[in-house]
Length: 424
Image (tube, rainbow, N blue to C red; front, side, top):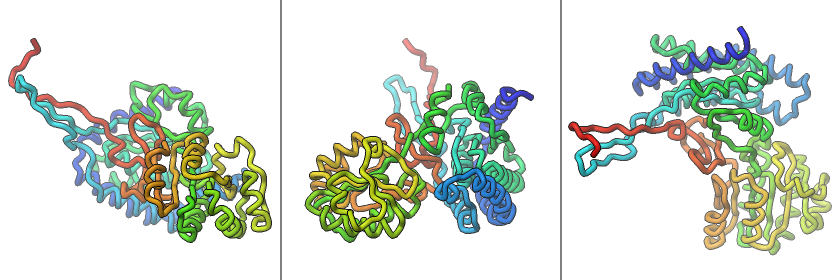
């Protein structure tokens, strides 16, 4: 079988499965999700064994420590996947909701109802927990999903998907086995083939680095929901509680630097820079964070940090996914907003201040999918937003924006109830 034939068969199977999924009740879907969660925990030894193969190959291939951390599965992360599935089961079914209802002057009644999108392709890198997150959300919202993880996680992804399908089939014999499929090849050309099949595939959602997302967007013939990168900012205002600011900065940068909602640039208002920057530089230095700084910041962090470099122009728009951070001193909230709207990626940005006027200006004028006042950018996540597991994050302005959960995996149709009306 050629690659074209293989991908066409995969997509056709998904389309058929999507039609079967549409027939399942909420109770049936929830029973499958709970069975999947139990099975992931019960099959943890096999999942970890598969993950160990991926970790060994990736270590040998020279993946960075941050990327290896994203790839690693242990009991805690497997339990986290199971917890995510149970949370999705507990959420309201997004299908069949009435969004609008109206009666026309001729008596024709119209109702706008949420429906599944159909077949969703998820393309992602490194993090095998995405397999469970994406599959569970697509399933609950009545969508068949085709999962294409990175080659570094191929064994982990296959075992996770197999575990979920087998558990669902056991809990519900009519569960369509092709509702959750993993692309069985690491050949990159498979993506191009799959995303040319507009008669079967309805939507693509890439998750990963900017290079992956741009490559997918450029080759896809089906609609793509995406964010290119996460260049996230924290702005420490002159009216900030500096102790709070320090905790937010540390959390936003070093808790998990390899994720898209980690902070890449710290902006500090000039009146508090001399007080704030030396102390935060010392704390970041303890975590081995490299600082790339403007001239004003350089004078203030000298002696407080070991690894300090002048920031180049391209650094301000770079997503590092690593222990590297930009620092700039700005003159007030206006300059902070201008910097973010120019260099940012419209992902997540935060202001730390006690001044409500400055905060409201920042919240309204920063053109990002998620904007915070006195909170870490790390909260931009479906789980943290109460959506259960997350399908991805979008910085697009048409359709879904920000963390994407169940509701963002639906479309709608109009249903008309007539009594013989014909158009004049």
